[in-house]
Amino acid sequence: MRRSELYVGFSVLFTILLFALFRTPFLLYFGLFYSLVLYLRHSALVPRAIGPDVRTVLGIVLMSVSPVFLVVRLGEYSSPSTFHAFFLLGLLLVLFEVRDVLIFLVPLAEALIALVAKTSAFKVTVNWFSNLFVDITAYLVRGLIDLLNVPIAMKGNVAVVRNTLVIIGSGCSGLDAFVLYILASLLLIYLRGSDRREAILLLFGALGIIPLNAVRIFTLLVIGYHSGISFLELFHSHLGDLMFVAYVFLYWWWVIRR
Image (cartoon, rainbow, N blue to C red):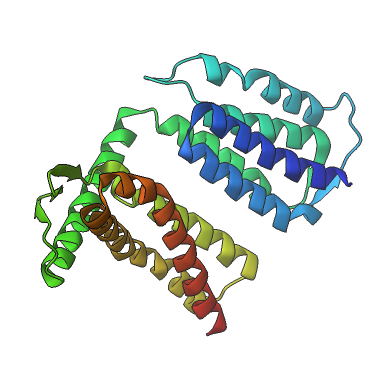
């Protein structure tokens, strides 16, 4: 097995292990995104002789410093995502000559976003967008309830399913899926060398995430009404993942065929 393939495999396992330990969705998304980039561009990873040069020293320093971000609190929490990004970046510098700048940019972006996310300004901005997505989603869900005459009472972002209150909070806003779709679309545009028309169509698909999320929540409420809240909780996470993957696959297939 070549060194580049070992590095790709290690990045996947490293991402999964850290997510299992820290349960940080951002780390999982960026880690899998980075692994996909590595898999598609592994030919740009050229093994290099490991010796006492500047690249090797810099890589070792990054790997040595990275565990600090698991210990030191930046704001309220530590930053496993920064540890993840710096360790993989350091290992990359030690092992390879890299002929594709994107392979460097992805872990750098992960570290930068993870650090900026600790600032109060970033949190205020994310909360504003999250609340906006919650309001839009709640409006669409209420519209579906009224349109299909489902006996579920809903006011604002709170639904009453039989005798249980179900709140559409920030975790249900769909903002994370929206951002993930944009990142994945940018990668596809880069890999395909898409022209302007195809790039616009691929990015335009992000808007479909909003009504898709509303349909997901409406479906969960109907499941909860007819089968009980325990079934709603059972389908809560997996239904969204399946719908997201199906939507992305079908929409991208349609755009690429055109």
